Image (cartoon, rainbow, N blue to C red; front, side):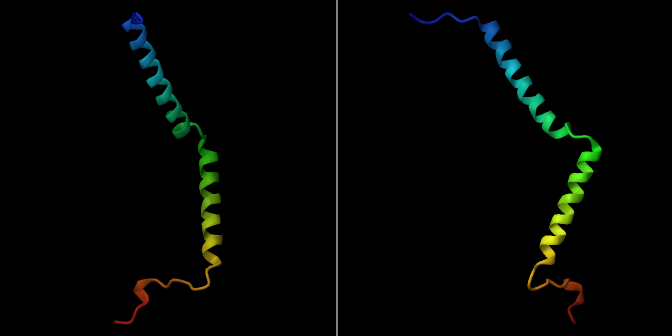
Length: 67
């Protein structure tokens, strides 16, 4: 015999799950204060600058090429 389900409850459960997923993505996107975001951006820029500073061969900009 098949299991009887209440379609209204299934529909509401699905809507709740979608709302929870959206809330989780919003917490990730908007959950940090501005100060924390800028601090993270500055640290990443410093890390990139230090990493690029350890290159053996430096890449020159193309604008310095003789014509």
